[in-house]
Length: 387
Image (cartoon, rainbow, N blue to C red; front, side, top):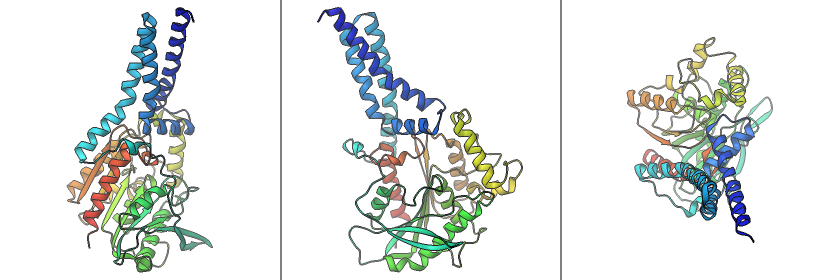
């Protein structure tokens, strides 16, 4: 093959290898054009080490091609390579700070949507004849002693299952805990309190039935992701909302909120500019106003009542706040203010902020953000769920 043709081939493939990196960076850094665009950006960011491979190949081909165009493409691919390594590099630094071990081999462990067993599903309440269900996840190795309990509240939307990411449930259970994954009515229009009421009902049911599943009713932690984290906080921070069933809601030993909004009032930090410039932002704004009945300026008391930052007291249970540093749905400053409020009130708390990490980062089971999170949750729960 003539040398000019070889060089053109090398340059062409170098440019093609750069293209995935350019598209990925645009979706990660710019407002997503659609939900599908955001989902692709989420996967690209959480699997960013894999996205570095095309840039590396493009760099090698450009160096082989040489010449002016080879130099330009080499520079472009080198820049893309460095940028795709930034999320992993910053998380390695966070892992050192948190003293969390990281495994490069575990990075390829896949998604958290599958696991090695099935839960026991049961109804904890009925509303208008429709069951509200929960999944019970028990340890693979049974215990003779009553185990601490984790009640998890899923986020997402009303059509999602309670055990949304079951690999997290079995991991939590295999840490010698009994896990209850709770479904609920998802923020009905103008009646957001019904979601809180359902979670409080579930907490009462779990407390009453804990012994049947080998759980200790006096050691309960509540966790939740996104909207589920909001409900975990509201259902444990205040008793202003009665449970949706006839039960006694227990005090809990700890709360863990993952990438959850703490302040929905007009004084809250603005949502990220990527959301404000995206069609997704319009959808989310309409949805939040629909569940309350209007804008924060029109219903200030309602928005304050559904904002955990305004429910903090000295009696608030110990709380772990997990913040995604590159969250489309939440400015990290919201969580930082929340943590400052917990500190002011003297509430025991931990704060894990994960840089260059997107909402729902826990979808990637082996990702560095998920590995660090497991380390933090384990330590926090072990400390606060002692017998």
